[in-house]
Amino acid sequence: MTVDPDLIDAGNEAVAEGRADSLSGWVNTALTERAARDRTLKALAGAIADYEAEFGGITDEEMASLQRADRETAVVVRGRQAPSTGRSGGPGRGAA
Image (cartoon, rainbow, N blue to C red; front, side):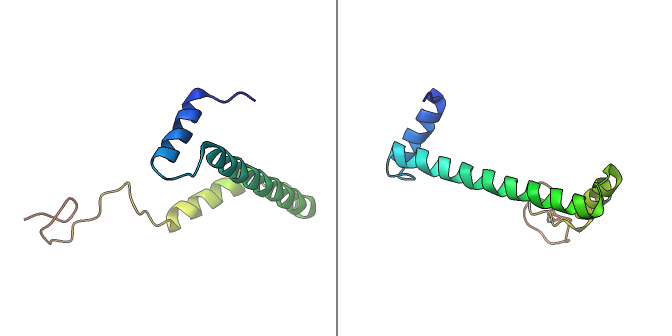
């Protein structure tokens, strides 16, 4: 097995900072998480295939409509400045 040296450095850094017990443990955790992700994606692909077999393919228009609906109902927790409240304070607070 060949591992990118930058990943070995990241694993060793995690051990040095106490975020992992050992490099082997860090690698095993990463592989476990990847295997779980792959299983989830496989299950999702199966669910979509089952849905499309029963109801027909999901169209680009349906996907765009769902994306718009998601954006309209999303709650942004960072990345945008909060609206001014008229109170003094930090950024986005309408400093007086």
